[in-house]
Image (cartoon, rainbow, N blue to C red; front, side):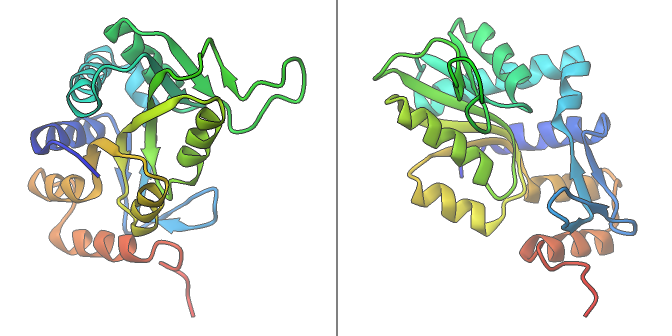
Length: 215
């Protein structure tokens, strides 16, 4: 996983400011998967704050070109990364497509929506990396369309070991604007959480699937 420390800290601070990331070790959230979690991330909120969405699109654009070179196409993963992906593509002057979780059941039965040609270089935009399963599923769909995946850029990652392994095995380079470690360090420094709460959040990150389950 690739990141820039200054960008990671600034992005984490902005996400905390607008409550796109909420930290609540005392009253954990329940994810759709059923996991109990002391953190909840909803990066769609970024789109409602023009100065912040502009910062995110510009940092994405700068680091995409630096890490992967300027691609032919930007692809957003539906649904969370469609909005920010379009902003990045517009800012970079590039075509945009998006990838559905699965092909449509009707019409042309597309999974990739938009104009895409074989052999084009594509950078994939994602809003959040958890296990990486849905993100890499989108990469598979694009590879089935016979394009070259230059890499993936995401706003935030929980930094789960299973995700890092999956990206490595899929031969996909991942750049993130921010990550879990930088978030926790900044949250303590800015007094969003205490050091004891930081330890709880670190513990969750090592085994999220079993955290909070009473035995």
